[in-house]
Image (cartoon, rainbow, N blue to C red):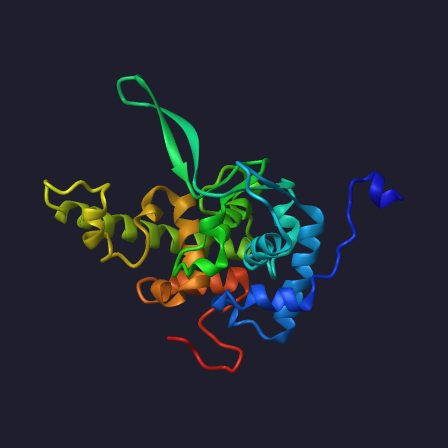
Length: 273
């Protein structure tokens, strides 16, 4: 009765067959041993009991959608604990990418209003919003995971606005600042060089520019700011670790120690390099 009055739900076991079916669509779980997978399952059960899922624009939430999102969301927090997600309850899922109104003030003080098409958004102290085609594990995304991205933002927001530095033990702060700054500045330099090489007749925002941006180790969106760099490189760390460790081995090692996971190592002890 007390749990009901406090709005708490008792975790319900996830059906093993359904769990196996959803997990099979996520090949980047291969580094987890049996104990890690059991912990992930129990965390997903606790996550599902604590969070409320809402379908937007007619999207219907079923058990497999809930489990798929929970599984991806809980992976970064596997050894950090779910307390990192304590500042919100609701997860909103759209049937497609959604539009968010934006405004910015230019150098002349003029306000520009525009619509931004999004695959996901994490709001500080508020819900996580996702596009199901981007969150669906059966879609076959490589090196891209909007669920991990947005939930890493949530970890980053634990001590304020997302700035690329989540709450850290004192011993790791200096290393984190140095390693992240070095990698971020290097990546921004790489993006600047790519953009300088794009011919003037090619719109850098169009698909025609992809041939140049494809030379980067991962999405140029990571150059937006340190918060986005953390979120993008974290999703790469989990889903395409070679793309991170090759250009930035020190950053890979930092994430390995922070998340306490090594996606390059399989449960058999071999690597996926």
